[in-house]
Image (tube, rainbow, N blue to C red; front, side, top):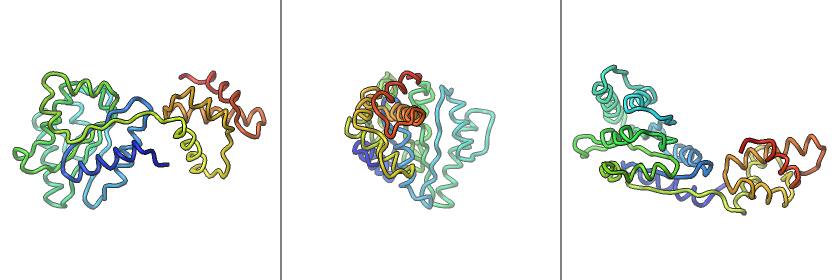
Length: 244
């Protein structure tokens, strides 16, 4: 299924990476930022780009760089400056020897500590910006945008050539998303009546994760009750049986 706002962001981020720049996508939880990162990766040919996915969980600057070193296969180093140099040398070597540019995809970037986020300017600064061999794509919730506008983050913002935002699904998109998931699973008919889909949208408000949970639980309940299709009552029971 093609969601217009997702397609727009994927195309914009792809263009940024091709320009040897970095970017950020802001989205509320469940709006599909991880989906956008996966789609971006699928569009970057492995003969030219090496993509590394990192999911942040409140990492310190040192731990973030260690995570990056592990992801890209750089030699570990105990001293922080040596660790940074090791990663930069790995990026240089990859580009000089094979012509492959590194792309670091940082998911849940709103959990980054400000000092760790500020290191973006170090990661993307090569030979005083005359040679850009790595792109960084940040993906996070709206608090990431607030962090980027804190005092002292001006240099980081200047290195982000694109800042896009995702929204939750609309009513019609929710219906098409459910139909798409059924089709991908091998189904030929959508086992939800219109009232059930409407109820799922109202309860999920277009949140992809919530839609998946509600639809899956609704199917379980309908099957248990021997219903031919999921109805709105099944959807409501599903909501009552989930932590949402």
